[in-house]
Length: 124
Image (cartoon, rainbow, N blue to C red):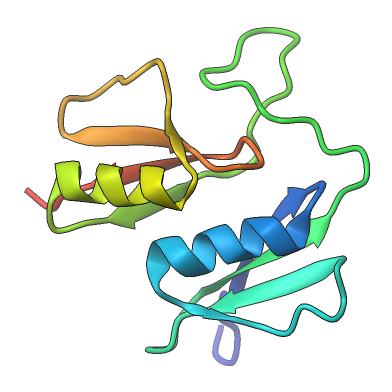
């Protein structure tokens, strides 16, 4: 269909402003206004799909990998990097942690400050 396009992926968090600041630092993107602490956008200065962080008062950190009965992730981001180790180091400096389970040798699964998994990968 013409005239329809994905503009934003929204992540829930107990503290949307902090999570938006994390993604702005991680990606080098532009942090939107933070005067409404319930919804903050992070935009790619080159255009394309952005990230928004919205308030979920009862946010439960997802478990990854999930098991029966766990809070499941609803989405995860795939973030391409030029150098996997440098990308991982940068993500950690921004506030991410590396997940304990790493299913692939050429991908690093990280966890953002609100508990959302995201993957760092290098084009092979």
